[in-house]
Length: 512
Image 1 (cartoon, one colour):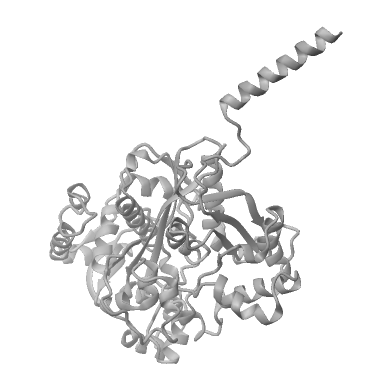
Image 2: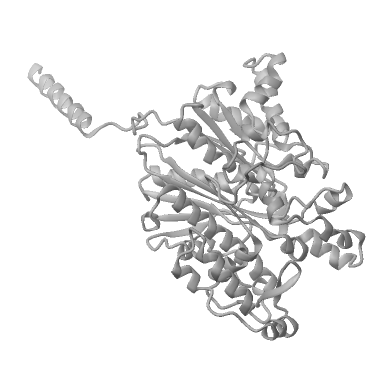
């Protein structure tokens, strides 16, 4: 069969400062342990407005308005820089304000668990009437708003999760069960946020790439959340739930979980499904994680830096049959961190980087761009985690030096040429390899690069089931236009081989 191709990608952000305060685990934990802490008192002073978050250079890269190369021209730190003429809508997606995101959460709710205040609801209806992706069918799902007294009653009597906008109560999310922890209001809030951000990513994917939702066969959702009830905590299915709201009526789907590495696992599996002929069009998608909002907030406030982790991330990627034009996914060149690989940096890089390259008889320098853990260093460096992408590129380059494919003096030149500065929000799974795919499609079609490697890594030990690390990688390559991968032969060629074989047999019998 022919290699599968990457037909399109979208990336979205939802700016949610009030969710930072009320739903990010750093803040909710602090409120339990030390409710009068200085951090909680100072936190509101360091929350960004939507305009500030929109103009933030890494966020403009994420939605495709500027490139990673453009970002590299900004002197760090970036939190005090702005992109001139920044826009909410980008080539690859959009940044949605918090109030509209609440509306999208309501639209994504099919069990009437979300209550929005009546005046607030009317405001959102007006805003959505101007939104390019919100049709009448979606807007009608907002229904009528509720009285403020009703919302307060659910919060007080049934522990509903409050929704605030600029610290003003505008709604709540009810629990879905009286005693099931997996269906309490806080968990439902987390799950609906995943669903809503996933829906927004799919809507943008369809719109930016002129894709008919009815053509989608399968959806793989690969975020870090898991939905279910007390009898099957992570049973799912976000994929089909997202597909339903986004109008993919001919699709089914399922969830893949692998911590931060899940998107690359999903990419490989989607490519395999298409190559095998099981499905023609498979979407890999993920919504955002409210738990990770403000994750490094304490370090940021301590250094008088704005809370940069104030956005939920989402993405959607379409994998389809080979069209002779879109970049291919080399499912024959996949890197794997196996159970027996070990956790040393050299062992990890060898299994994920050089093993698939060796299989393809390629050098480290034959990959034009490596997309690794594209964490935004503006977020991680003040928290003491350093520049994660840079560390990865140095390790890859060092292995190239050891393999005598790079001169030692050329190490930093390799990092600059084959690496990328990080721009993705620290949403766990969101930075892991996939943020560059949207740019890679254009870079390959325009002839700027031939080959990229998408690398996902995961910390499996976080689940306390194993101490193992995880990771997978796959080569993304410029399409040569032949539509076939060299393994498959044409029907005419098969007929020619059979005919030749029959002639050889007949000749052999005559000789006898």
